[in-house]
Structure formats: structure tokens, C-alpha cells
Length: 598
Image (cartoon, rainbow, N blue to C red; front, side, top):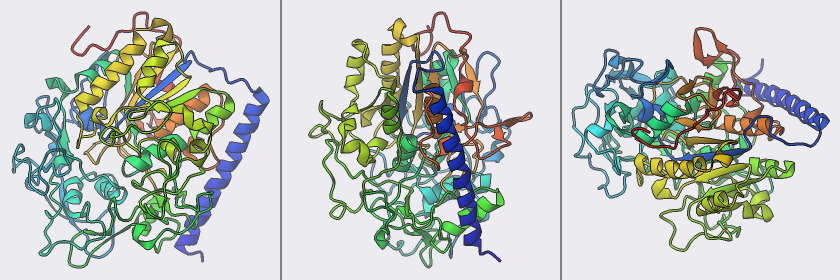
């Protein structure tokens, strides 16, 4: 009889074998078609703008669609009313307490519902005192979603950074119930970094409260830029972060369709120091206070070995859903945030002196793939000088983990590094008619929308600036699609479906908007997709092969059941974004982004 671990490894081998065959067949087919990489659609320029840290319901929970479209959100489900108060089906989002005192669980034993939410806390917000409830919010909020802007103004309001690391997000999901968000935030010991819990231990020890249950209300003028884009262009209400967890792993996935792992710097897997390995099992005499998890603690997981802490519960869940783990033996995958092995100017970081640094990666990435195919590209990111070095004193504007290509040895040690430039270069290239075929755009940190040190309104301003700059150039916009999204949901509550793809996710729904003359105004696409779908669009539009035999861009496009467009019947699967567009019916007068009207 095979062991559980052996069965999982065999399933993974079958998945990789099938993926290799698909990849080889795809490569052969493309070779037979010739070397031309002329786009197959009218889209000659793709611009991908990536902000930070908001779930779909956090921004679009109260959105009301136009033109007879439907949307899956808090309002349509009756969880909230138009004014943001609890709706007739509020109980569907009720939050629970639970008990985990021995081994980590992704579906722990629930004990009782919260009578009222723990008072929201802004510990991780700029300018707020740590470990104190935020006095802007009541201490008796009902046990479910609440409108943030009832208590903190939408414009430039730092509301805090909920728990949103890998093992925490699996628990928040709670086998599809999504009912443990405040409990996780108040128990896991966020920032504990391998330290035992305080004595006496209480479920309020981390003092994050229930800020994760907050949402903004578009019916009351919150997020007016994004509402305007959704009304006049297109969006998805079934787009997901590809990885359970935070910014670093999510950006790496955006660039590779895969997970980074600890290595010798030449692509060979290695074993990291014990202090860098995740251990979500609880400390004795605590309820769910992780033994080892934090930005200066564990972030690697050997998920092919079910004896490793936290691995078996996720592996068991995957077997129940007939999904492979995609965990290669001996690989310690990075599931949270560590910095890249290269500085912005290409000089190496000493990993031994800076252990919270991911060794150089050799994963195939979209930058290399496009360059080999002759597809022009740039990665525009805030905080760089011309020539690629980081601005001195730019730490408050620079996000080192927000560029997947900065982790890559084959990018950062070659001339391809010159394709990574400051975001200001985007405006110069657009003005001079030199925009590449594919542009990734990451704002300066204060304009990223990150709820700890930015605001949604700042990200909206940035998006509007980039977008209107392009729309105001009709010859350019006529062949352009602008994708606006975020890296991940920040641990904010979301009521949407999550498809199990493999050990690493998918993760929660996040916003994704498409601005192009080739979309119907107000269209809402329901096809299941995630960050890997952006890679699939690039590959299909420019006739490229998937990045590697195991990358998720090998997954098929979803086939939805007739009665449920959100859940694929052929999972694991993700879309290629082609269904968002209508290439046969171009908008004659696509509008500039003008919040509040035209």
C-alpha cells in the first residue's frame, strides 16, 4: 500500500508529466507556425498596472453594475444594504471563533460566533500607535462586514494591514466558509517571529481586531475612479491572487506562473536554515499562536514532505478535491515575503549576511520569454534613477519585493536589467511613441493603495494618471489594453469562490479592470482567472509557449457549468482574459477617466 506522501508525490509526477507533454506540444506547434510574433488580436500594447492589498469585496462589495450586467458581491448577495448596514443575509458572512491548541489546521474546530467583532485595530498603519484598538471604530460592530468609511474617511485614510500570510489565509478561507478572519487576526501572533505568546495568553494578544472585515461603499462615492472604469469599460468579478499569502510570493507568481524556492543560486534546491522554515503549529498553552512565522522568521515550506509543520492539512484537502500539490521533493518554496538577491542596480546581496533574502532564482520568467521571442517589454517601478539604481533616500517610495524580475539571475546579471526603469519613464516613452508591447507598471509606494502607508484614493489617482495619458493619445489607445489590478487581497474578507489549484492556492478574489476600446462598457466577466491569466493573455496574443512544464499558464481555460459561471467544471483551470474583450465591436468614443461623470 502506498503511503499518503507517496500518493501525493505520484500525483504531482503525473501532473508534471502531463504538463511537460502539453508544453512540448505547444512549443512544437508554435515552431511550426514560424517565428512571427505579430499579435493575434488588435491589442499591440498591453499595460499591466499593479497596486497593493485589497480584496474584491473590500473595494467592490457595494458596486451596482450597469447595462444589465450581474456581479457577485456583498450587495448582490444581500449581506449588506446599499447604505452599508447589515442586509437580510448578513448571517452568511458571520465570523466565528475557533480552537487550535495542538496542530495547525486549515479548518479548525469552530467554537462559537463572535457576538460582536473585536474592535478594529490599525497596528500596522502609518502614524498609529501599536497594540491599541483604533478609537475611530466602535467596539460593538456586528459580526460581519462593516463600512470603513462610516468611521474613517475614504480619502487618505490609513486603516491598517490585516493578517495575510500563507498559512493564515488558508485558515481564513476555512474550507470555503471564509468565516475566521478576525479570529485568525487575533490569534496567530503576527510579527511574533518565533517568540512564544505573552502570558497570560488571550485571543486579543495580537491586537489586529477585525479591520479585515472592512469594505468601501461605491454607492456612497467611495472609490469613484474604479467605479467610473467599471461603468465605462470592463472588469472581472472572478479574478484571484494566485498564491495564498502576501506581496512577495504573489509578485513572483505574476512574473513566473510559479513559486520560488531556496537554492544554491544556480537553480539547485537546497535546505534553508531551520529558523527560516515555517512552523504554524501553535505554541503550548496558546490558541493558534504560530511557533515560527514572521518577516524575520519562517517563510519556506517543504510541502512535498507531509511530516513538515502545516503541510498535511493542506495536502489532505487537496486529495479530497482531486488536486495535485505541485510540490517537488526537496524544494523549500517561498510562500511569503523575502527580499531579492539583487539590488536595483544589479549588484548582489550577501544572502549569508542578510538571511531574509531569497537566493538568486533561475525560474523561467515572462521577461526572458518575451525577449527571446522579440516582444518588447519594460518593467516600470517607482523609486529608480535612470540607469537602474535605486534613488538615495527612496526607501519610502520603493518596494523591493514588488518586481518579480529583480529576483531573477538571468535578468539582473544581463543586459535585460536595463528593461527595469523608473515609473516616470512610462510618461516619457508614451510621449515619444516608444512604449513597448508589454508594460508592467508598479507605482511609487505612497501611490500603491497599500492600507498601511497609502490609500485607495492615491492608487486611483495613479491609475487615472497613467490611463488618461494613454487614452488622450488616440493612435496609441486604439491598439491598447490596460489591465488594472493588485498583488493580493491583504487578508480582507471576500465572499467569492476560491478554486483549489494546488498547495499554494488560489487565493482570494481581487479587483481586475480592463480599459480598452475593445471592451463593452460596463461588462463584467465571470470566467475564473488569476495573475497567471495575464501570462496566458500575453502568450496567446503574441504566440508564445507557456513558461515552463510546471508553470500554471499550462492550465486549460475554464468550462463553467450552465447554472454557475464562477466555478469551473474542468478544474484546475484559469482563463486567458480573452473573454473580457469584444474585438468585433470597437468603442467609437472611449472616454477619459473622469470620476463622477463625463
